[in-house]
Length: 444
Image 1: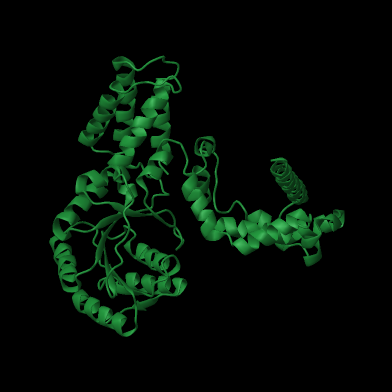
Image 2: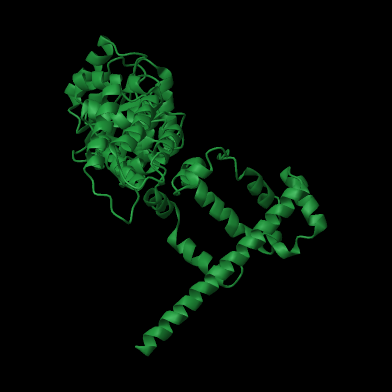
């Protein structure tokens, strides 16, 4: 996410390294590179110029403290301006009606239908809402089928009428159906086009007028850069939506849409999509996104993802097993499954400060655990619980069963044993620290 932009910002700020103080000359050189980085990210020229002008104005008027360098100060000012540019604060989705009606708009191919499924899953699992999905694209049977499949995946009911060609009538009947079924939220997926046209705009405007949604969200493909911003502007002028959703943010995106869409349409970005899985939907936090763009990671989001996906009772059981030195391959396998639930691995690595830069040329994909999982699944129950019994012949059998070679099996067994030792040491240190705190308390 934003790797190219992060790299260029990093190179720009290096121009100030070793400088004793901020001057108009060295700030001008740095901000020239920052402006070029923004333009390369497909940010509108006027917005990029206004942005760097504001940073320069604040930098020249700032008092450089002895504890920080001029480069650090400029990074801080740039961070604050990036946060402001993207909206400043996160904006929640409006869930207030009975039922709440959410209208989804956007061009064909922007990811509207997938987002509708993700939003239904989010509201069901995170907000404990009863949700109804509505197939309002009357032109593409594939879109209706896709929504039905997504509904099955997420356990959410889908209202569809393949015979009707009237999206307004479908939307009205869907809301009535939702009321009868005690649904709390209705999400209406509307038709898209390959480009903005009058027929499309009239249709979405009529649907909105008919259902009076509490929330209208415009879905935009972040990989289309400045074109996405122009489309967002055209839609907003016609239907005055409440918020923006950026999809495909995990792809080869330059970042221009995320950085400038707020300032162009004056509407907040509410969600970002970062993968195909139904769980791959995040609330948009401008400050956290600024952190990631400037290579600072996003530890808060990483911790939140961990809290959402890790079971507390399971963690307590795991701690007891570590204390007794009975941590097994079954436990190891379970931990891998928990990590995979957290989302795209490369995205997770990018949330750790400094790691995004270190791993930028390293291929990190969701298949990284496949060979490990295959090796573990080729073990017998006894071998998983007690790896010490895995001798040479067993290793050969495990390698053949997993489609790997004995070198990979040996490597995993060694890594597992090293992990167990490290866990035991950390547990012992924790006990020692608790004992020391207890002794200190007794002395008082």
